[in-house]
Image 1: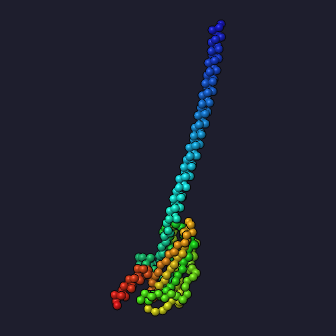
Image 2 (image 1 turned 30 degrees about the horizontal axis):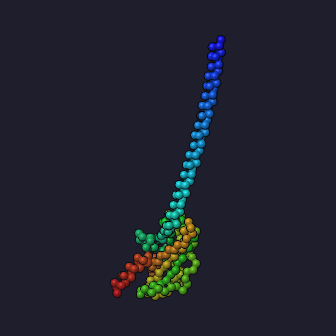
Image 3 (image 1 turned 90 degrees about the vertical axis):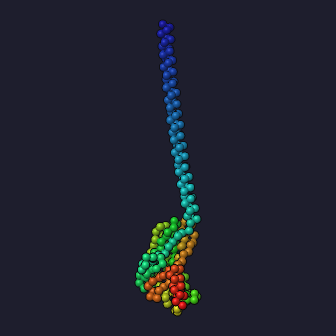
Length: 220
């Protein structure tokens, strides 16, 4: 009788032990799940922080690149009788020329003002400025994105009356004032052309005009 009682007690103890072990195991598994979820949350937060830090570094590097790089613009003619629209520009109509302003740099540019002045250069190299100097832009362009271009037109016919007559070259100076979009810093661009007698062609002054001067010197 005692052996049966002991056996029943042992069974009860064993059952209680198994129950406790199961509860302990469940607690361990629950704790492990919590730790894993916590670790997962930490990893997710760390990943977000890492991505944010990387993004900020990239943005900072890009901003430094923008501020350390000057804008690059180029002026071309919309029509040319040669293969170069940079050095030889042909009028759409006598005295009326079409231009292409290209933004070739990595910076966007804004608040673009285009001025045009005519002046006379005698064969001895002396310049005569026009009586009326251009103080207001003939064209204003709000914005040109990096890698894009915009077209504009200039009419020289109303300005030719102010140009000094005489032997020499009639020069057309195009000045462009503009700002770097990133920080508003102001930049300047200018190009000078020789206007042909029929008012139908602009020849780049730096290249064509020097060739003309050398040719005249050789004739003399």
